[in-house]
Image (tube, rainbow, N blue to C red):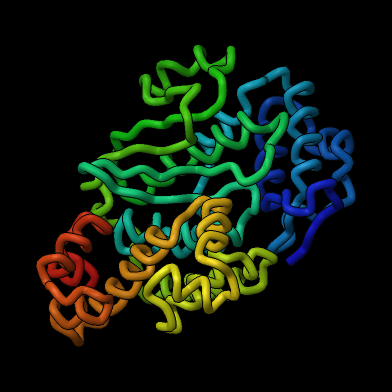
Length: 339
């Protein structure tokens, strides 16, 4: 993993490929990329090197100069509209070749730490509505609006590209409404709300079951394996979230108390540290059960009841309800869709 430059906060980094795309955007706005890279102190950096990362401080300098040189404050809108799934590396490939929207989002949540430590993703479902929450893990400073708009709009557009259809969703952003937002009211069709309590994409839970046009189980498995390897090699691999997921994968824990004991923590400390990473024990357990159940259903060697029992559900009806909540499909429908 290549890290470019230094930053006062060692946790703040982003994939350098995003800087490449910002330079491309600015060049399309008649600002030479070489001039902008020089102003930001990046003229001697290979931003396109595989795995290259760029410190948040460098991103801030680049965005500030980009806004000044282009006289365009709304760079986040343009970056989001132009974002492609391939910008996200192996995670993008894994999501692109997943079977459904739900599976792609689960991959995004699990492997977001391989891309950046500035944000975390959480996926929850309640009363027929799904919420993909974007948690800010550190202060994004002067580039907050650019990064949050680019990511949230980009995820929305990627979803449309992967499903081949227009999606009916809404964005809520925990930033004040910028002056330039009014220029994009027609583009956003009233689907972006500012000044919210959290950053989130909201959409119908039924959309989790939408098939992806480029689904490929073999490619998805290969890409997921690469993401797992990257996750183990990142500094975040020692985080309580990753440690908990390893315990789940090993089948060693089923309660928060068991997990805390295995990690040498008090249960209260474990809950606090998980909260700091934007998740809970219950949420991680449900995600693990979904991933495990989905893998077993893809193999097709067990009955629905047997799969439910394997992931902790003695009652098949409870398992079917849980799986529908996770994926938007019944286990039987999911199994048919991936065979």
